[in-house]
Image 1 (cartoon, rainbow, N blue to C red):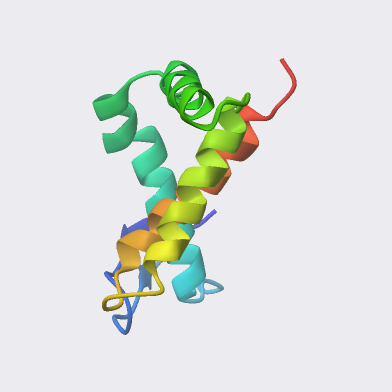
Image 2: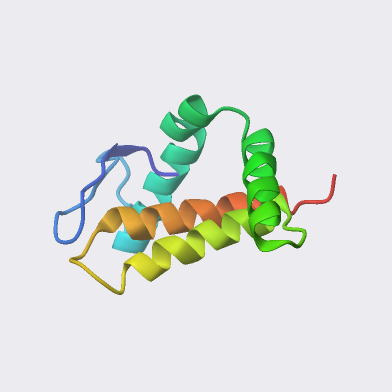
Length: 115
């Protein structure tokens, strides 16, 4: 696995990788976006919002009450991803929308895992 020295803010900055490994290629923008999402999931957002299972259970209960039907924590994460993707339809390009949507989809996959 490549050690990441620096990752860019999109769209056109080069990505550096471990210079000691000859076979390393610069990461694609998609790979950088996913890396940034993973850093948020296990870093700042984790520290800010606490246990993700508890957090998304709370969100799911709020969505369930609003919609009048049961929403699971995984579905709540997918709904938040949908919201982030809807934001790409107006305003200017914002890489946060894509990174956050990727993070929500990854969290939905984790929350959907059988216990």
